[in-house]
Amino acid sequence: MDEGQKQQFQLLAAKFEEWLKAINFSKQSIENYCGDLQRFISWIEENTNCKSVVAINPQHLQQYQIALYNTEIKVKEGKTKRLTPGTQLRKLAAIRKFFSWLVLSGQMAYNPSASLQLPKKAKTIPSTLLTKAEVKRLIEATPTQTPIDCRDRAIIELLYATGIRRAELLNLSLYDLDLEGATLSIKEGKRKDSRIIPLTFTAIEILKLYIKESRPKFPNDSSKTLLFISSRSGGKLDAADIDRILLKAITKAGIKKHVTPHTLRHSFATHLLKGKADIRQVQKLLGHRRLSSTEIYTRVEVSDLKEVLQRCHPRADKKL
Image (cartoon, rainbow, N blue to C red):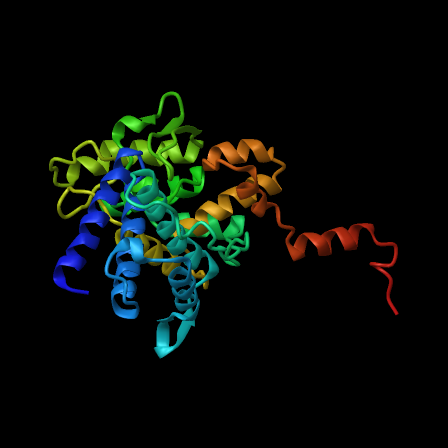
C-alpha cells in the first residue's frame, strides 16, 4: 500500500470520526472507536493486499477477528493474557460501525462485516466488592483537616453515595449539585443520557464542607465551574488522579483488595439490592438502559446462602 492509499484510509477515518460526533456519541466512545479503527487499518496494511477499503471482504474480517482472539497483552511481572471477550467485542463493534457508515454514506455497496459473528460477552461483575464495613473504613480513612483531604473524602463519599461512573464524576459542575434539594444531576452519562440522583446526608455534609472551606483554596482557571479540581493547577482532574486518591485511602484503611471507582459503583448497587431496593429504581440510579445490565448485581453471596441454610435447614444445628 503506497502513501496515497494510506492517506485515503486516514481521510475516511477522519470523516468517520466527524460522523460519530454528529450523531452525538460520547467523547470516550469516539476515542475508543477511532482508536480501534486505527488498529484495524494498521492490521489491514500489514497483513493484506487491500489497496482500498472496498477491497476488504468478510474473509479479511474473520482473519482480523482471529488475530484479536490470539492477541496477548503484557500484564504485571512479565506475564501476558489474551484480550477479554468484552474487549474483542468492542473492537469488532467499532469496525462494524465503520462499515455501516461507509454503506450509509454511499461509499460501499455492501457491508462486509454484516455476517461477522461477534463473541459472546458474559454478564459478570468483578469479584471485588466491598462490604458495608469496608466502605465505612475506606471513607473514614481520609480525614478532612486539609483542603486536599477534604476534596478526596468528598470524592470517595460521592462515588459510593451515588454509584456514578468515574467519567461522570470528573465532568461534574458546581451547577449539577442541588444541596438544598439533596440531588445530583448527571447531564451527560455513558450514552449522553441524563438522570437525577438523590444525595445522602453524609454526602451533602462533606460536599458543603469541601465547597465552602476547601475548594476556594485551590488555584482557579477557566475550569472554575468544575466541582472537583486539581490542587496544583485548579484545572480538571483526570482518571489517574482518582485512582491515586483511592489507592491512598485503601492503603490507609488496610483493605487488601483492588478497589476502583467501578468497585464502589458495584458495591453501591449490590448493597441497595441486598437492602431490598426495587431493581428498576436501581436501574435508574445507575443510568442503565437495559434492566439486564442491572440484574447482574442480584447475585447471591455465599455468606447469604450459609445464613439461610443455618436458619432453615432442620439439621443445620445438629452435631454428630
